[in-house]
Image 1: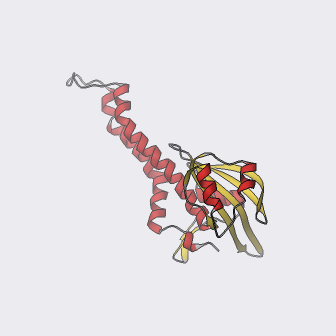
Image 2: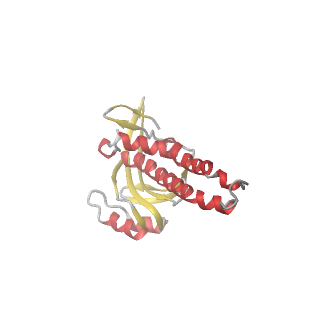
Image 3: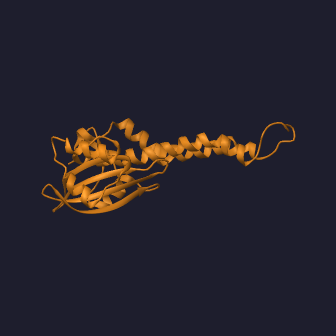
Length: 210
C-alpha cells in the first residue's frame, strides 16, 4: 500500500496535472497569439514598432513563464508519485552538496551516501532523494520496490531525470538512469520503469490512476 501521509493534497495534484498537460503550453501559445499583430506592419500605425525582434521581445515573458511552469510541474508531479511510495525522502535542494547533507542527517533512513557518490549523482538542478519501499499484491503475485532514487529537474525544460540505485540491505549496488518528459504520464512511466503500479489515491477510496 502507499504511504498516504506522503500523498499530495487533491487540489495541488490536479493543479500540477493541468499545468503539466495544458496550462504550460497554453500560456506559450496564448502569448504568441496575443502578440502576433506586431509581426506585420500596419499602414495605419507607421510609428508602432513591428517585426520579429519586437514579437520576440513581447512574447519572451510568456515563453519564460510557460517554460518555468512546465519544468516545475514535471518535477513536482513526478515528486508526488515518488513521495507517495517512499518510506522516507529528503527536502528539495539545488546542489548535490546540500542534498547529500540532508541525506546524512536523515534519522529514519541512513542513505548510503558514499555508495551514491561512487556510482554517480547529479550536481545541480531541482534535486530530491527518496527511499522507495513498498509492496502490492496482484492476484498471487506480490510486487515490490526497494530502491533509492534521486530526482533531477531541469530549468525551462519539461524533463525530469531519475537516478535509480538498486539496494541490497542498506547499501546501493548499481545505478541506472531514466527520463520522464512531456507528454509522458509520470505515473505511467514510473510504473513501467519499476514494474510496480504507481497510482495516486485520495481519502482512502477510489483514486486517480497513473
